[in-house]
Image: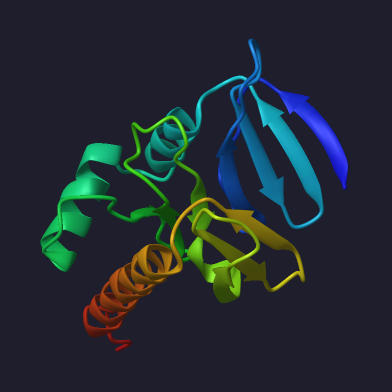
Length: 165
């Protein structure tokens, strides 16, 4: 995969994941289907900016997700309505190790028992596998909540679609 270094980044249909990157200058590693980007902004700022560029605030997206899920912690964020792009955090968004996974690209996940710590391996539709330091049960729950939010949004959109005359 080709690596690129950029100042800013907007989440789009080919974005798979945003990792915190411990570097003085580049704070996020973005994995796309066919490229990797190192971005100067932290992951949460990329999420916030991507929401704004798609006509909504991060706070508004959090409030919507809390209303739909009846949860208040580790809420999925609907980034783009048209492309059905929703991001799932592995930890609290303010946590230094929070990774954001774009739910639509995940085809499977399974527990990784290769070491003493709990980990989960995520398989993306591109064939890429990522192993994260988060429990399988926790991330599976996050993914289900994200997909439920997306389903809720899509169902409401279909019900309120204008009819042709």
